[in-house]
Amino acid sequence: MAGDLTSAIGGMDQEIIAIPSDAAAIESAAPRKFAPQDLQDALDNFYLRVEYQPKVPFRLSRATKFGVEALCRIEHPDFGLVAPEHFIGLAEKSGLIARLTDQVVAQAFFDWRKWFNHGLTLKLALNISPELLVDSAWAEQFLARSAEYDIDPEYITLEFTETSTLTSSDAALDILNRLKLKGHTLSIDDFGTGYSSLSNLYKLPFNELKIDKSFTTDFRQNPAARALVESTVEMARRLGIKVTVEGIEADSTFSELRLLGCDEAQGFLISKSIRGEDVPAFFAGWSSDWETTRDAPKVAIVQSLLQELMADSAPDATLVLAAARPGRDAGTFAAIGKIPAMTLEGASLAALAECHIAIARLSGLPGQSRMRNQLLELQRLLEEELLTQETIELVIGERRVRLLPMRAALIGRPSHARDVEIAIDCRWFSRGERSLYLFSDGEEWFIEDLGSTNGSWIGKKKLNPGKPVALGFGETHIAVGRTSDGLAPVTVHLHRAPMAPNVVAVTVGAAPEPQTDAASGTQWPSRDEDLARTWMVFRDGLSLGAAPSCGLVVPASHLPIAGDVRFQNGFWLAPRTGAGLTVNDIAFDAPVPIPAGARLRLADVPIHAEQPRATLRPLAAEERLLKTDGHATA
Image 1 (cartoon, rainbow, N blue to C red):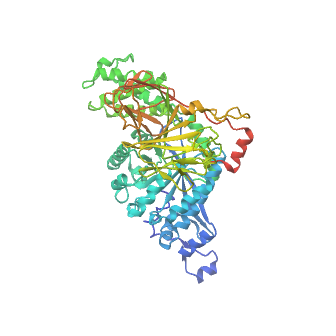
Image 2: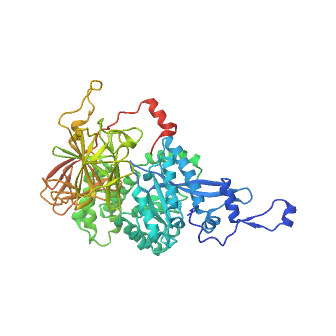
Image 3: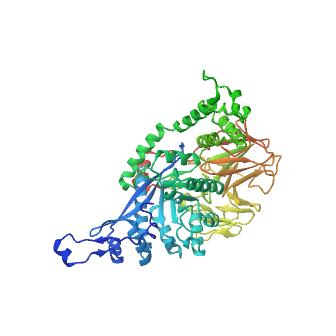
């Protein structure tokens, strides 16, 4: 990968030599190699230049997230432009890799903050040498930089090359787990070229793998390279790991990798590395082209399906499915014949259901791999169209359940300065950074008071900043604003089921009489709504059913476990065997996206999926100006 901070380990046989420009000097001085002192000089004088190579998704989506990878060079007055393969290994051997990485990170964070303040939010990938995983010093420095620039970890991907066994050490595993728990995406770079690839995939906490450009280059010409890429993508999909492919230089390669189900693309076809100041203009142009061609791949697949289906039709182009070739099942292809019209008419849910049925039937028919792949790609496009990354509430009878797929959540009053995931607009709570903080660390959950005004207690123990309290199984009651007589106007209830340890259910209770004042009329305008709501904070997934072991207990269900909710680029619902699932009266027996506003029925229980209204009022013009003047938060 061009500019990879770890790509130089195998390229140290090459040398950068400074040639004196003065003729007399040439006669009197031998050529000088780029040495540790030159690298030290480059760091002292900030000769590093950070550029960015764009990363784009293979598939179109209304919730498209673009990204960049930070790449570094050195602009040296004596050596000219020095590529990373000539100084990364030198930095690792001379003990300068931590300082070099910090300079790159600081510059990349500075540029990211400028883009963000001008309305462009990108995912930023940073290359990290495995040499930095020998102890926690670098991780502490990196997290301090993140806090300095106020960048949410969800926007940062850390790429580690697999050409070293260092990422498999116990110390490295501890650091990687800590970074992942903070919310960072961890990526195996140059996958397929290093050590213990399969072991790394299931033992280490990686969210992404990057297929090395050497495989991409040979993908269309070399059957072995194609087979390795296809098997890697299928394996990653089963493990829930995102696949990024680098080194893409041709439209045909992009199209084929897209059909395989790869997630993100990088390479000269999209763009070479560019300066930070050119990034906003690049993505403005790309987004414009993206918008105008949003439906093009879907329409192209539909047309291709029609051509396949009409291959045996009559000369007048009337579709005669009964005359299908031997080996074809007429019923299967009659069902497939409905899909194009449904897709073009915008009946995405119905088309998705038919895709599920057709793909399952085609799996048992020989010689139908091309059509099956087309249907799989159409299925992905339909799923992306239906997916929503916005907050979802499930309305089950009189109960409202807000789904929060995350490892940490603030509990407090709404704030413009900081997102509060469990927003309760009651004066007894504090705002933003002074709220209650619910978070997961490994397999455990903790609650901490970040310095709230009115204070909070568990029993007789007051919660204090810096002293989180572990949550056991069962109920934990947090008294908020407790008075001298021991009464609390508000209580936060946290529940963990022993059989669903990755889920915390949060509810709020109040004193019998609402608190009011003469000035505002009420100090808790959303009181009735908040008291009727449950917030489900969960890692990995959430089961639904009548069993007490479910993360979300639905007593009306006729099954102990009826289905599972997960979040992957949006919310999905997967029915368990025998549960029966309909979405807007369309039956599904496979995982399906949960569209906002959908009417669901799972195990005979009606569920409505809603997007909750915004808790905060819109920003005034002067507040919007302030947030773009260096104070915006990710």
